Length: 93
Image 1 (cartoon, one colour):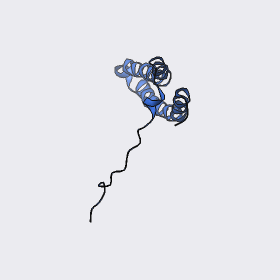
Image 2 (cartoon, rainbow, N blue to C red):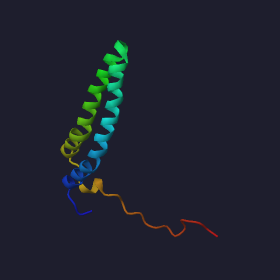
Image 3 (cartoon, rainbow, N blue to C red):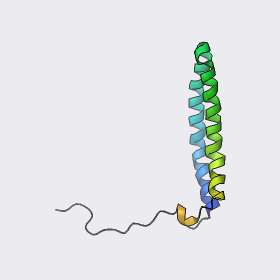
Image 4 (cartoon, one colour):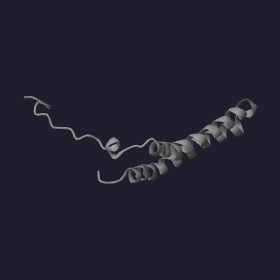
């Protein structure tokens, strides 16, 4: 709750980059199998998917954070509001 917006975004990107790389690798293996074993029918479709995957990774990792900073995201936008505990919430016997 006491970190800056830049640190929050940096920590978020750092913590999700391994998941992004693993997802990219698994998806790209499937697309490469379509490229090599799919014949001429799937050749251009697999190339289009490869380009889309690369642009998707680039935009989700690099562009989204820069746009968020450019739009002026504040700390208050990133902090979850504290819920007040309701006395009537829960099981009643």
